[in-house]
Length: 456
Figure: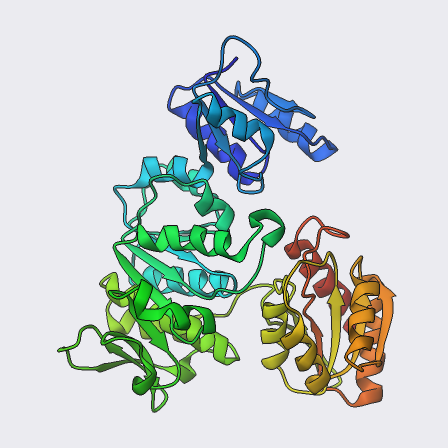
């Protein structure tokens, strides 16, 4: 049995195995799946003397046990093999924890939250980079954190987007700056209760030296100063809505900084400099600016980065305009709250494409927003019959089960003309795994279908 076992042959697992190998560990990768793509990766890693076992779960019955098990983010923390490993006293950690152990002498901005993580992470990284710093975005987006640890040139800062899965399996992660963007029910199939999900996110912020919170989030606002009395809070609503005596807020079209109860407020950047639509993106802007200022970034670099920031792929991404109709890719809206924000951010009437693999959650706000803004809804994927039933239950009948994206795009264009809609919006409110390997592949399919339609 090797000294270290990495479970999960994704980008993170491969980077973790390579890092362990570089550090002198005898390492083996294990994945219970098998596919032509995985077989190709298996061969590639064999050339690096990293054995890969596919269709396999590590055997913990033998006399010689591994000293370390490293888990990829997609592997549930409570599967029997990991429970048993911990009972046997085998050190069991996540890929982020392994990266942290190699990179903890470099300052991190660690960003978590149900929604808003990716935009906040991308914008924060752009600001730090505009200041001339080597500050890669990694973790849940960009490179795996262990890839950063493998790079020859060590970064000045690490801007990490961390999911609850990654935080859950991180034991000692304690970044200088932690950001919590939003909190709504998500991943409950894995975390079981809202309290468990909250506590996992809270662990990261508790371990962060400086804490930044979105004060406009209903749940975080409610726990407020009782739980997080020394944090920096943000609000788009003006200084009178700032929780506590320090933070970042919007006033007269500017992002304003107030670093302590006694410090003078000062303007940092005009809100209009950000090209992304929606109040939620203004909230993301506030948190990114807060991280930059607490990280010592100057106002000029912040202003330059915000002006130049193009937005995030698959999040309210404008694909093309055809005969006055904007086609917008919001494939990253994988839950009801994100999809509700997507609808709120575009002009009505909207032709909405929704569906995929449904998640648990409260769909009330999303359904209300559909009733207010959607001329019609085209339903795709496994969730289509369930969504159709829910729409009927709230009295919305202008929908059609269309099954696939290939059928939905031309149909949406036709309906947009019929209803004089200004927007076709893919905002699925679902995971993608019924028809696509990930939300990115779904968004790319939508993009290509839209561009093909425009060119035809």
